[in-house]
Image (tube, rainbow, N blue to C red; front, side):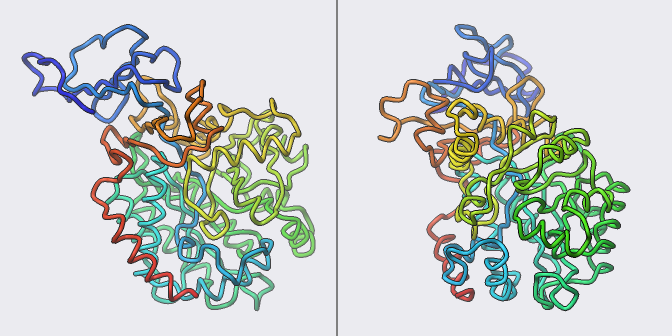
Length: 460
């Protein structure tokens, strides 16, 4: 429970209010055992064990029941796919047949259903301790030209940070690609809208709440021209690049048959091999390719649950990080995960990577947390996020260990991963509480569930 602190003294009204999150049960930061002080949306002070803040505070929050983490950062999602979870047309299929089954169904997407899908996905993420989310929206059937604008509105209403990628597809079945003709756009339309969105929403500031990235979907749905000109546009406007790459052996075969090279060689050919780029999945990279990614500081988003559901394979996280490539974490689309619960994705990463390396010590609970915090922040080019340090943004996720699943847990931080935490008790974004007692502020969960469920019926 929050309680008013002692009188902050004369002059308090002339400065930003200071909130002390006091003496947490555990905190993912050294030298902050006594808590942290939040001021003006940033972390102003780390309080050592047994100490008090150096300057007066205006309010104190007793964090004795809470494990405090940096806000989790989701670096790959498809919000619209919340409408097609566990869909009979796609269950038990691998990526290419899974996509071929769902593309015609996703083609029914309209503005109203996308709005509800985005609202539900963002709410789920926020409740799971996620404070920054990257969405990859590449589907623009007729009438959905303002898809990214809708996502911006929903993110702003919830108060969550976002990197919204203007996804795109211009290589359809008639041209040798995978998606059906009616869900793609031409390159000129895509590039023009990309420039519009950057001009309208892309905030390059330290405390940005909304950023835009550019994201042709994949080698099998985007032309070389679109890839090259998108990279040039991103360079011109200082925004990031994102795409799916190295996800399946089918993709390898497609690139070899279509372009005469492996996917990473293709990425280099079209001018994407650089620190502006982060990739989704990154499963089928050789050791040499991992080294190349590391040399060029290309980021990779590990999507363990999706990779397992679609039987795509294991992301070589250790080889990538040892090579110097940033590696983050993502829940991926809610039709291939099939959820949007970021804290649960940490446990998936732990289990998948231990199976991958056949070693319990090869990947720890804290390694999983590093993917979801500093690793993801590096993928998005946001060093002010994903860490508890003076000057960092006050994006925080507070979890309690009150459920039966945690009884008997001795390491509070590891317990969140090993015992399978599902939701945060409190979430702060930019110094403001956005979730309290497990409930997002300003959202009627029952009404959202009912409206989203109705919208999903048109995708049967």
